[in-house]
Image 1: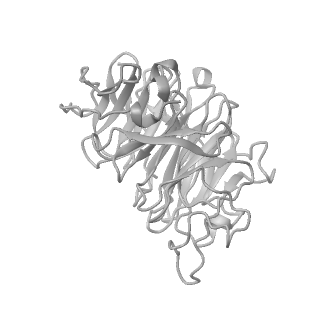
Image 2: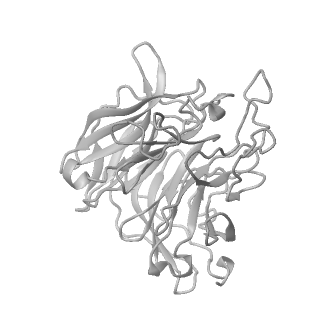
Length: 382
């Protein structure tokens, strides 16, 4: 296989800004890539502020949620706007707020979607919850239906709140959580923090968890903000924000311990420890990929899939906030190592958070610049 470096080129940034909550007119730029893997980048929604997630419903709507608490949709008919929802109990602090979004496997029947979000109770108690909602056919309002999971710790600083959702084709949910800056949570099997959880849509533990009575699927994590399912293999990868060294991509296996243990200093949360520490965590599973130093802040990722992507078909793309790019990784046949690495969209759109492969094979991204943020569509084969 030819190296990615021979395939990728620089992407030209978009030059216009549209009004908030509109579906902009086509405004694209073509990358300087070979014809087989060239891309076009266009704006789906803009005028946003820190859109955390982007998800595509089976009826063609593209939904995002701003961390501070607002749902915005680009409908299949070309219209766009806010989607009303009761977020009166939303806890927004630090990195915590309205975070992951995922659609029910049976959305065509039940019109259900799930969010992971901060919660504050009437007495000021705070946690992170997975909430089930239903949406009307016109995409004008969300109605809260149930709380799927409660009690995921929300740290006092709002740091390390997670919280990525992945709706598995078998109908279950995977939930990537942060450790809430707790010294002990990542290695504590009774805490849902610093874990990847696997549950049924009613919140009960899913089949295949190491402890049938627990939602915990993997542990020893710092802040899992990305989950990606590899097409054709069913392998699940977690994408994790590192300390000052080593953002990580991990191949997740039931019961796996990924080696983060920030309790070396008995008096404080100790981020000087390694992300994967086999000395203090015997049996810790090594990362498939790590950023080294400095970290680049990796909050999301997905696999590219489809012939139009050319030599990038099957690559894992990982978003970066600090380095303002997509990291592109070719994985080994067994999925345990990286055989080639490059990047794209370098410093073209600012901080990148979420990456979602749309049903049509295009790549959707959210920017995370604080204002004037956008949902971008990257189309291959331009």
